[in-house]
Length: 329
Image (cartoon, rainbow, N blue to C red):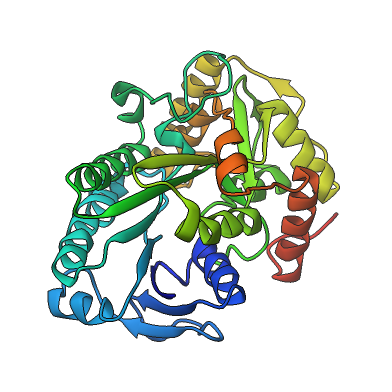
C-alpha cells in the first residue's frame, strides 16, 4: 500500500515509518521542514496543513493516511498551538481526504482521552471516557479529545474510515525532541523531589509502531484501541527509572494536594526571581492522577504485544547516555 504519514519524523512517527516499510508498504512522509533528518526508504514531502493544494497533491495515489502529527506539551501557553495542530489542522486534512477520495485513516491519539481519573479505579477500557471537566485542566488532552470527536463524526457519516489508537506514555530510545522523555530525565537528574500518589501507564514506542502497522489492515473503523505496556504506581515508576539509571529515588512522599500546593509556591518564587522551576505545576498535577488502562482489545484485534517495561527503561537510559543527556554518577 501507498501510505501518507504525517508527523513521520517525530518520536512515534519514525518508529511507525520503520515498521510499515519493513512490511513492504511505500511511505510518503509529510514534514514541515525539509531540512529534517531523512528517513531511509521514505519519500519526504515538505508542506503545511494550511496549503490545500499541497495536501491534495500529497494524497494523490495514497491508500491510507497515518495521522501522527501533533504537539506534546504541558505548558498552558501552548494551548492555542495544540488546538490548531490537533483540531483545526486535522479538519483540513480530513477535508482534503474527502475531496481526494482517500478513506482510510489511522489516528494517533492518547490514552489520556479515555484513561484518567482523580481516584483509584479499575483499569480503563475503550468503553470508558475521561470527563471533559478533568481533561480541561490539561490543554494537550483536551485538544486530543476534540480531535477524536471530529474524526469519529466524519467516520459516522461515512466520509472516512477512521481507526484511533490511544497509546499511554510513550517511552524508549529515539525521542530526539524529548517529547515523552522529560519525566524520565527529571528523575535521573534528581529534579523530582517527592513521590505522589497516582499511577502511571507506559508503553514502548517500538511496540506501538507494530500496532499502527497492524491497524492499517485490521483496525475496525470507528473504534479506539488502547496501547499500554504496563500499569504501575508513581512510586514504582520513579523507582524503576532510578534503578535503570543507577541513581537513588526520592524518599519524600507527599499527598497529591500538598505536592501541587508546593509546586505552585515554587513556581511563583521562581518566576519572581527569573528562574525556571525544576518541576512544572501540570506535571505534578498529572502525577497525582490515575492513568492505568487495559490493552486487551488491541492484543486481540491488532496482535499487540508489549515487552517488559524494565527493558524499555534500560534501552531509554542507554540512549540518553549515548546522546550525552545523562551521565551515571
